[in-house]
Image (cartoon, helix red, strand yellow):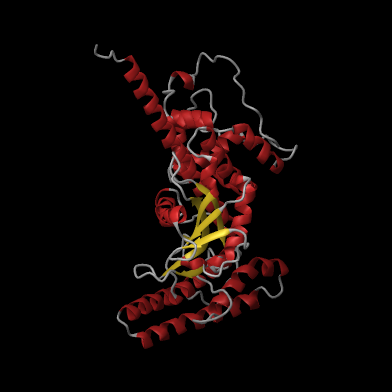
Length: 443
C-alpha cells in the first residue's frame, strides 16, 4: 500500500518538537530543506499497490539510505544512530523526537530491493538538481565529463581451491541436516584436516603435496554429491531444493585453472568475477566493474558524480563508453560536449561526433582542452573517497542487483555529502559577511 503522508497534527504536550531541540544552521537541516522530497514520492509511487499495510514514509526510507551512504554506515549503525540523533530524525521528516525507531533494520533491505537500480538513480539526479539550485554546480560543468572505471569488491574471502571445496562440503552437510537426510559420511573432520595441510604446504611452496590435498577434497566432495543424488532421487521437492547447491558444487569440482566459462570464486556470492588490475600491491580483485562519470572542471561545491553503473561480465572499458554516455545524457538532460578518459578506453565505441580525449593523446589537444585533460586524474581521488567513505570498497548487498544498487547509492551519498559541506561553507561565508558589516569601521 502507498505510504501515508505525515502532516503536522498540531502540538503534543508530552513530546518534544525537533524544531526546539536542533540548531537550524546545522548542515543536515540545510540539506533537508534543499532536497525536493515530493519528487521521490512521485518517482517511487509506481512500485506500491493499493492493497495491504501502509508502507513506511518515502522520506524516512530515502533519508535513511542517504545518511547511510553519506557517512559510510551499515544498516544496524544507521538505525542505532537515528534513535539517538535528532538531526537524523529531522532530516528524515520527523516532527517530534522519537525514542524508538518506527521501522525494522530489514525494512531498509526490502525497500532497496523493491526499488532497484532504475528507481534509486533518482537520488543521484536529485543530488545534482539540488546542487544546481544551491549554486554548488553550474550547467556548464556538466558539459565536460571525466569517465573512468574501478572495481567494486564483493564481501568474500580470498578464494583458494582447497577453501572453496571444503566450504562446499560444509554447506551440503548443513543442508542435509536441515532436511533430515542421513549421509554415509559428511567428511567435515577429514576435510578440515586436509584444508589445514593444503594451506601449510602452499605456504611452504610444497605444491606437489598441496595438489594431493586439493585432490583429496575434490574426491570427497564428489562422493558427497553422488550420495545426495541417491538419497533424493525419489523426492521431487527435495530435488528442487538441492538443485542450486548441487549445481554450484558440481561447477566447483569441474572448473580448471584456465577456462572460458565463469569460474566460481564464492559459494554465497557466485556472481563474483575476477578482475585483473595489473598493480603490484593488488594484482586481482574479486567483485564487479563499476563505471564512474564525474564533472571535469572543479565546480564551486567540488567534483560531483554525474553517473554510476555496475558492469558485469568484466567488459573492456572502451566497449562501455557508448552505453554510459547515452544513460548520462538521459540523466542530466543534455549531451556532454567533451569526454576525458584514460588509455584503457583506446578503441572506444562512442559516437563519432562526440569529442573524446584520451590520456596521453597529442593530436587535437591544445589550449583549454589540454588543461582539462590534465584534470582527468581528478577522478582518482573521487574513486578513493567512494571506496573509503561511501561503502564502494566492499559490497555487502546480495546478488547482481545488490552490485548495481550499491554503486548508485554510493555515488548519491558522495554527492549529498559534498552538497552538505557546500551549504556549511556557504553559511559560514554569510555569517562572516554579516559580522563584518556590523563591525564599526574606523573614521
